[in-house]
Amino acid sequence: MKIFKISIYSCVVALTCFSAALFGLPNKSNAETKLTLIYPFPDFLQYTKNCKALAKEINKRGKGVIKIEVLPFNSIKMFAQAPAVSKGRVDLNCIPAAFYARAVPELEAVSTASSTVEQARKSGGIDMLDKLQQKYFKVKYLGWTTDGNKFRIYMKNKPKFGSNGLVDFSGVKLRGNPIYGAFLKAMGATTHSLPATATYGALEKGVVDAAAWATTGLRGLKWDKMLRHAIEPDFYATDIGWIINLKRWNGLSAKAKNVLQSTVKEYELANRNGLLKLQTAERKALISGGMKFHTVPDPKKYLKLAVDSAYERMVGRLKKAKRSTDHISKLRAAWQQ
Image (cartoon, rainbow, N blue to C red; front, top):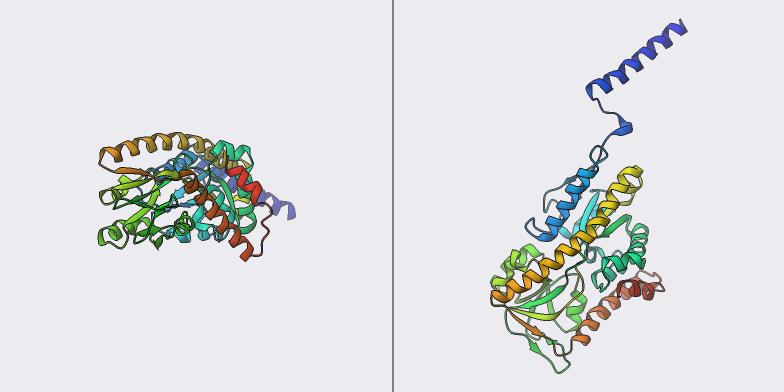
């Protein structure tokens, strides 16, 4: 009787396996892993296009192994996106590092970078930020995918310059942002925190009359219709990178991890080259459209203040969190080359 039962069981198992192979039933051993991705900016901006192109390439290379589902724009608000990844509500995010620098203050390093992505990888700067994010935010930092652009300040009216060699922002209402907020305040600016999607209306209504933005994308937002003056030199670096929930990352197969990481690294360089070209083209287009460019009297002081103010904020946040600051000089050296 026992032999008969075992034989029946063996036949059922064999038939199940045969049916799965024949009719394509799911097999957990080789099932495709599905990941969700959220992004912060409107679809027409180049940064979002680059993000989606990278996701598409990962899906192409990882067919049968890994597949990314890109969630609709604004399905999670921009400043809630990184925390959602940290908590596992969504798997992946392409997001400015500054948007969650309160949780990991060292992320100011990539926001203020003068190093290229190649230099940041070679110096260990990206690896340092990866380890810090794993420890304090429960995400894996896959890479920095927007090297190649910087930021500049745009104004409705011609800028005034003070005797200190910097911009005089008295009476100017600036749209603020976590990326460069400390720098603007260090120059005495009054800032209003607004998402990119609300800024056009704020400019129309006079809520703000100046804004910093990347060296690519102003025309796409149509802010150039009202912002007719630009301040140079350009500062910082666009700091969008890719993060994945750490628990989700640790649960991926070695093959899936390799597809994700290798494709992100490859796109770091491809995006850099593309963004550098777009930056040059946009500046020419803005000048052709009548925008006036103005250089601050003391460019070195301007750029130094930009970096110093951000690092002061970083150190202040670390001390408030009762965390060590012994590693900051090494971090700054890795990202300021």
